[in-house]
Image (cartoon, rainbow, N blue to C red; front, side):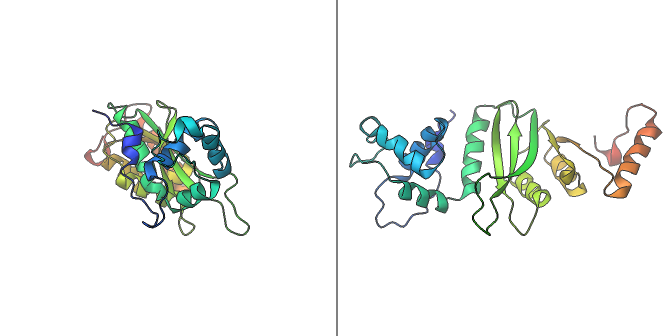
Length: 223
């Protein structure tokens, strides 16, 4: 039986100190989830959402004293959470509701708007978007010392078997190791081929010209 998202959130380790925990982790995360679904995105807005519904939500969320968390409490928790672990939990919850898998996953990297802090660059994320669910089903942080290509390899490394899922992405993912990783997971890929590296586009043009429009033979025994 598929577990609810709240049950899945209970898998997250609590990053806070054991001393002074006033609110249960799952309750805080559930409050954030419901508030974000209502269009609230800042810690201040999340806190205000809860306080306006204090009587109806506090005990439902397990807040025994009946109070709602302030913005600093919410911000402190969100800063300490492991974002990759949280993304895997949400992805697993979505996968439970799509047992036949994803027909198509689109890889794309973006910097989060408003995440830059002075000289500190904004958060850079690589997302796997499933059009069939109209949702991002997985994300990976792109560290400052790496790039989206390497983040894609990390993401594919922890991804379950792809089945017949088709992976699409822009030219940064058109790399031999990414293509091999997709195939090793059982998936297929459609990626852009630009003229950089210079030989790639020429090799593709030559391959298509050689077939004369006929079907391609399996390369190296692979489909």
